[in-house]
Length: 306
Image (cartoon, rainbow, N blue to C red; front, side):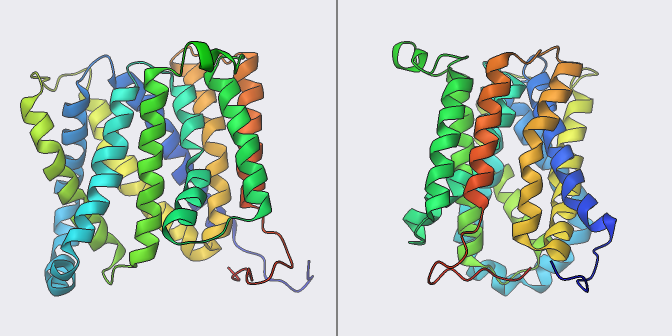
């Protein structure tokens, strides 16, 4: 490392770290919500409230860029459906039949799923490290979901909630790839606002058809947290982290999310980690870190400077 390389201020590293912490706490909130409010209700209320809070700040910019927004409206609809409605909606349903610990580790697989989706959609060939990391992570995930016995998956199958969480994570991986591929010519907050609007629209039918699940003292704090912190503050912090550190360096902080989730779940949900959680989770995270490593010297794979 060059001795004259500029030292980055500590606050730059706090941006993605705090975003990862907020998203980890949201896993706990999602699990806690399973017993006090219907999935369709919290999904709708969360994004409706986030949209209301965003309106005075983002709507003027959306109006100013209305031509660009209208020209790309179908793409915004797809992004809102994947990132706001499908991913988080599946997570709320999954929370009823899996643990916050498992949800945290499955969410940590999103970077690996992103590599797979990019290989299919953008024809980006994965590196040897990405393939190796994927195999290691899959072994860890099998150990985790099989509760210490991967062969159990063949006889019993995966938990229903784990499968739903995996589908949600895959939807978010596709969301991230399409967001990068389309590079919509709209400001980040305006883009988020339009996506949130579509997320509300897509969740409205399920909300109207579901059994009534009124707001009360037990679930209002959960809805407020979900609407404000992971929906608004975390994206802002993450964007600042990517801006100052670059996407590659910032993405490393996502690897600490399962660690945060396990610790918080043990504290607030009494989800005591077992040996298979530690072993499977360690393998899964090791695989993600391996897959994110850049192999020097491969032709056509010059790494961007952050």
